[in-house]
Image 1 (cartoon, rainbow, N blue to C red):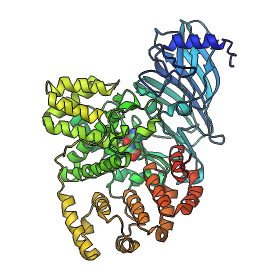
Image 2: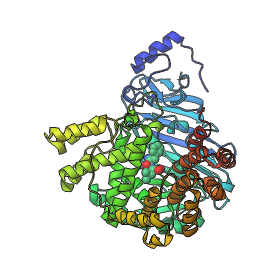
Image 3: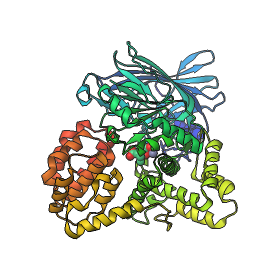
Image 4: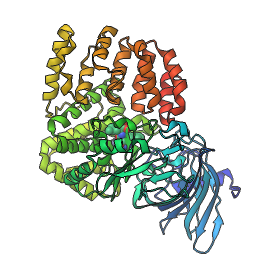
Length: 622
Ligand code: BES
Ligand code: ZN
């Protein structure tokens, strides 16, 4: 039961000021170092979460009880992040008694949510919050039976990164705060549940599951998936969970997973999390992959049938070190997570499949970087590695810059100091900061001491990469033989438009992507038609190729002829990376009414994260 708050406004403000030392104006006290969390770790640290979650698929609601265990010595207030939760009560569990807390939910900030302020007593050990999630909780996607393959059970998955953990668990929700967790989850009998923690491999007949994560993680790595899925082992420490009809196909696609894990360990040290499993989610998952510890969440679009998109696995696996073990301190340092990971991913791919193959991926990444910088503008602040996202949704900072400019910086350092020294440095870096968060400045300090030594010239260049917008003039020594061969074939083709001149039997997905990017920009639907007839680009191959092909085809007047294929793609997949360019191309090429019609039909399948992005494209005034 909630105790009415009786402190006057003046007293409340005073108390918040003292407790949080950060009040700028009423209800606006954000931890100075983390612009996206209201929590106050400098006053009170949460060290462990004990969760009890009851899932109600009819109401699309989680009823939760969370016990937040505090560090023994703490101040007099705990501030928790919360987005749209219905708080039913807060209690203080203390040495000798349990009392109702005189808590207050402050007014809501549209992006950050509403802080919960809980006054503590000196003997408070645990703060217990009882709550319900809202029907439109940002982190949750509830799918009805019909949207699953088996159609036997509904499906629920969470997506907490960047600041949505607070929409299903009231907690300190910033990447700089870590805690261990235990969870008891109750679902309908017959359903399976997994978390970013220790997991079982069989279903519990009563639908009761328990999870432990005994290593400290930040809130954005809290994850839960519930549905009709089974487990298949791949190696000793690796395996895959997927809907039964997809399980064998998924296991075959990911058959190199154990090898990837061993390769990653050889590069940068022992895998710190015990097991590494992955789960294939329904097509509406808004991302390619999400590195939830011990349980990477994946889009089914990665299952191309020929293992051609598995660099995504290498990427999420690499996050086990860069991201999950050493975490960006705030979302301003997002490049530390994604840039180092994209570099690490490339090293795994090179070790497993050779330099020419890995370098194709890197060269495509550089094209993405160029495109992002052109689109954002070379003087745009978002093209810096170190961001300033105060007052801005962290989503805005999640661009290719963090991934590809960050990776380029790693590559620059590797080439400048040699692979041996660089690898030793990175291994030491992970060891030094393990289970901690790090700022860009912390990274710089460590780099100065352990790699740059007194090399002022390199330091100036590194500072430029990090703090200046736009490109840095540096050309990594990637092997571009495969693409230069392809360019010759393409030039021959463009000379007389004979598709027989394209030796596509030898092309990998990456060559296809490169080729489509080489096609003349202001072309005609005739060229599109010829290529489509020869190579079935609209219907076949894989999602990556289909996506960039649709974008190209729509921009060149071929959209109306392949509308059913586009529609099928947009209704089957909710991955934001695919939806954004295709919906944009439709609206920019006189096909807005088609876009709106497809969106109306498909939007029930889209995750809130993708939905918002597409709505912005279709109705730019939102
Ligand atoms: N952690 C990210 C996904 C993410 C980033 C979620 C920012 C929310 C906010 C994940 O590791 C990732 O980068 N996924 C990529 C795939 C990767 C191969 C580039 C994706 O989903 O496209
Ligand atoms: Zn990533």
